[in-house]
Structures are given as C-alpha cells and as structure tokens.
Image (cartoon, rainbow, N blue to C red; front, side, top):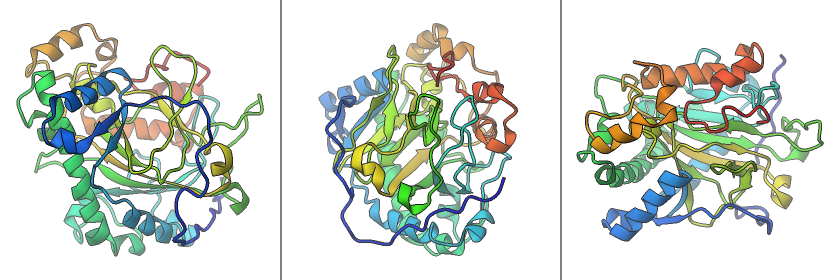
Length: 377
C-alpha cells in the first residue's frame, strides 16, 4: 500500500474549537471535581465511583493539566515530511510507540481503515530522556521531551494516582495497591502520551470511508482502551461516541470547556474483577460544522508495568474475589497473561498489515468489550 500523504496542520493561535459543537442529543456523562477528590470529599468520591461502575466514562474538572503546549508540539511534529515520519512508524509487531500513519489500523470486521495520525510517546522515554528506554523519535519530538512533555506527564500522573487512590477503599484494597502495578522499577510499561490529528476534509486528509448505507464510518473503530486509565483532552471538538450498556445505539459525547474526558480501561476493569467498567467507544469525524476543520485531541494512557498479570486482585480484596467469581469477563481471561503481552497482542491484531479476515477483528475485541458478540460494529 502506498504511503498516504497527510495534510500539513496549520500553526495558529486562533481559539479552539473552530466551530461550536452542534445542538444535538448527547450522553449525559457525570461531572467529577478533581479538587474535591484530592480533598477526600466523600460525596464527590461517590460520584466518581458511580460513573466508573456504570458507564466507565466521566468528565473531570479542576484537574490542573494544561494541554496546549503539547498540542503545539504536535503541530510541529505532524508538519514534518511524511517520509521522515514514516521512519518512526510504530510498525506491525505490537509496539505502540512512534508515529502511526492514517490507514495503519482497521476500524471494523470489514477491514475499513482508520483516518487519523498519532504520535505516541512513551512515558518511560520521556522520564529517562536523553536515554532511550524503548525507541527514538523524530528530532522535533526529542527537543520537547524535557519541556513540555515531562511536566505534562507529571501533571497527568497526579490525576491518575489520585483517582486510583480514591478507588482503593471502595474496592477493599490497601492504599497504594493499584499504583504498585505500574511502578516496578525493574520493568518498563506501555504508558504513553498520544497526540492525535485528523485533517479537515478540504485539506486532502485520508478520508474516513463511507458504508453501504451512505453513512461515514469510524475514524477510530469500536474498542475499549487497553491500559488502566485514560485522560482525554479534546480541544472542544467532538467525535467521541460511547455505546452505553444495554443500548443498541451509539451516543455522542459533548466536549465541555475546561473539562477532560476520563475513562476506565481494560486493566483496571480486570484488576477490579469487573467492578469498574471498561466501556466500548469509538471516534467518528466531528459532527456538524466542527467536521469542516482539523480535529486535534490528546490522550494520556496509564498502563501497567509489562510484568503485571492481567487478573483480578482476588487475594487482596474479598469484594473483588466475589465480583470476579460471577464476572463473564473473568471467564474470558487467559491465565498468566501479562499486561505487556495483552497490549502487544491487541495492538498487532488492529494493524492493517496483520489482517487475515473478519476473524482478526473478532480476536482484537477485548474481554471487557460488551459489543464483542455483535457483528454490526
């Protein structure tokens, strides 16, 4: 397959979003106040728990994370020649770090292609810079490792550490249990900063395919996140949809000014015996007039250390042990699989070059994905 020539993002100080999110029906995510979680507010922690055990998605305000310096890094990184970017392509062997070209992954069982570009930057590499823990990156990325990428990692780590700590009393776990699964000093992890860009249609960007019904297909296909916890900065632009439990229909999520969108990912759902929910979601081109403009988003993906075993913490919590005993998800787990193996396997199955047929998409679907038995997504 020939290389897709991506659009060059325009460096601009114009306000985001470029157009307002349209007046349309959206899913009403709960709002969690991070400042109150830090203060140990019992009512706010209960809101967090309610959101995380039902849909697994919520808005987070007062988080103190500034994404704009990272978006500026992304604008420079995506402006380099495609030939140079492809020299840092993440490849088809299960690695998650580096550049991802548009069309590098499938979005459904039919083999349709994604239409977004990523720069995935390892938090191990960011912390250790100039030492390489995983791989090298384009020089323009390397020049920003110490600042602003390292401060951004620290800010998001505070968010993740606080949220995970708030879950532990509820789950019957000792303080620090969850973060220990991410901090083995002798072992690396797959945690990453992901800068995501989808060019405006008029810019010559790789276009999302259109289905037989004439509707635009997903820019990023239906999935659950492979790590522990995700923090998403969307610059006010929509595109995210969730599939609520028991619903046949996808529902839009409206971006709120000053709020990030957070979600539980597979590992945290597994560790909790299914108590915390990793929910199915996807990304479509932004709705309404927002779809006429470049779409930027920025994710912080917390993932366990490579050697952390993907299994419920049944020895540490009676509550988790009881939940795991009746969880359909736990029955699907492969014994002894580590977080590193889990990430690599799913990443390989998503890649276009590794597709053998519809069975590849079925195998890619996670144990936490409640749409895994549906053939229409």
